[in-house]
Image (cartoon, rainbow, N blue to C red; front, side, top):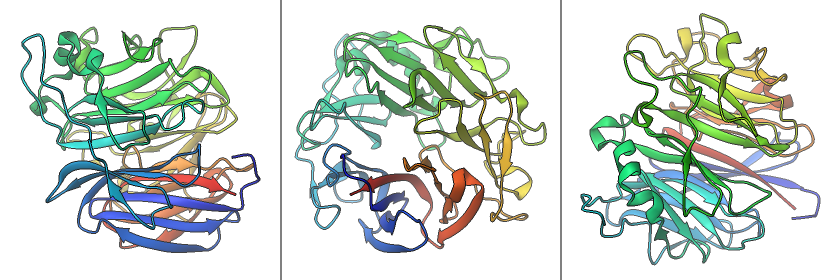
Length: 379
């Protein structure tokens, strides 16, 4: 959309439904629209940037099972996909699988109107070419024996099931795709998903496991820099990383984080224009992995030099006894001239971080556990 933005919409996906928050570009006042799909698990809600009005919501419902809903009027009405993501009958003698839920939604390239990608649990990759009405599986991932080995079993995955996530389309080339699997590594295609290569060099794994085995790699969130698509950032189960092309090896850039905080977390956010600026939200990754804010003091951290140094951003956030954390899709930044951050917490709070996270203000409390937060600027 070419017109200057005049308003923002936040899309908040939760364990018990979805909410839309509408505000102006000052980010000071918000009106709430919702709940949508009350009581159903909503993993992700995304707006199509190519038309500024089509929404897709990844849902797991009690009566329809895993599905995708579509709205062409900014959430005023919704319609279920006629053919949601579902695995095809397997080939190569592989065991059959069923989609538990669609986890990640990504609009396709700007030049491919109505194209979308979806990642599921267990790990699967799907594409739609009609705006999310029907979805087809990509067999080069879903039914490839090597990929299936890397995916492991449901028991090997994350606590609420293994995920295919971080689906990324290079803004310069619709055939250049990337995604992450938890577990199962980072993978890249240069031919629109017909073939794939792994991108795990330099990534660490949990002690006692072999880093050469793709299965053991657990990327939490992978992002491409809009300001320089040859740079990738990653928040991993084992640290924060950066990859600069044409290089092939990830560099662990989280070593500069405070030792008492560490560089373990889930979300990864990159600046819309400055490839040296990125944000993370660490969690306690020690011992039994309590998955809470370190010491009960939540904070975002920003780097403005590509990961060499990090700065704590906690003004306005609770200073003690706040044990929530932020999931991998639940932190984002808008694209305005001075970006703001937005995050949703496991305790159902929604926050805006003005001036790039320098000053945090609460938008909403008492929502269900927040799974994902996205933002879009509308004319």
